[in-house]
Length: 238
Length: 238
DNA sequence: ACCTGAACACCGTTCAAGT
DNA sequence: ACCTGAACACCGTTCAAGT
Image (cartoon, rainbow over the protein chains, first blue to last red):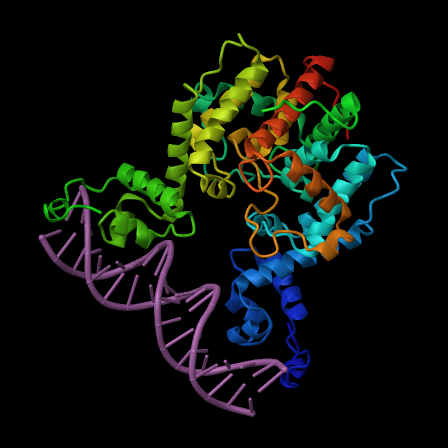
């Protein structure tokens, strides 16, 4: 709620690329990505829609800029994208880096959605990827193994992974009773898991725990592969 | 290009939910998801837009139906969603099932994009998930471990995972030379990997190989966990 | 240099009508 | 029962203008 004095005293802060991007992140944080439109962004900046186009060529460019801003946030959170001096072990370093990225992503839950369409690497995102590769390298993994590792990690390396089932139990989120026959294993698992996990953050899963479980599964597997053959782990030719 | 005889002889095939869904898949296969609009779908069906709304309530419902159709295709491809009799081992069974799903997904590359927003499970998709759980169960894994396994697999269980870098090398897809200093590890990896992998399907990765690498990494890790403690693998309390 | 108004070519969807 | 026309409330973006 801006004061009338603030509003009537003319535009104090001029429109800049940076201010557009900052406000874009605020808008998406507050309203979600579906409500993010050029018109609403302009409204929040107290400006006409077309003014945005003077500072940024189009909506895609705004998304590009916003993604870079988020990686700048990650850079700050994890204390820079330099590769650590492998004092604590590469697995621990990488784990911490990725969990740091995850913290930032959790504050901007709409970012994964726009990140996945965006294959072109911005500089900061590339710097992040570079630091992950560097950390794996500091552990003695070959570039070839690292390459596969990057694919194995997938979006988990950015601190998120896809949700597979619905959180909210409205509608028929719960499985109807007569489906117990056609979905015996799903029903069986839910019965056990629901009971075991009363203090979960969402419906029935502790997201943070599950994320770390999957991450560790992969990191442990990579460590085993790296140890088994050092520089040239066995790759099935053809 | 429909013949004039075909067009002038009146509407032969009436509009049905099934025909709408079938045509929707054809349209998305042919033009991609961005070009998929209600208006274009109607045009392809030789019908006015509003006719679609008689058979399906809205666009979301079309996506829901389309996703179910795709899982019907997967059901057919993998020879049914029954849990195999663990003759060949659960890892092999599950691997085959998931790679079968992947084959179908590769024929409809727009499906992953609409699947990830869709948390509500349709019946066929739930049957697929159930069969994956059942296959893990046939290997003696506890429901608790299976639950974590589902999260670890993530979208890989449906036969896809996110692409992390751009395929096309237009624009600045290639890394400019002066960036070699700020991205030493990325540059280092690309130098090795590009050279090693001349017969890759895309820019520099063999997607199929990478997918299977990541899948096996996870399946092997799960097998190790299951063996280490049978029914109750150690879970870090708190 | 920076911002804007009017307009264009699209969307998904509602509602009242046609046959 | 099945299909349609006109209209509404939105989009992102172009282009020619304002200051």
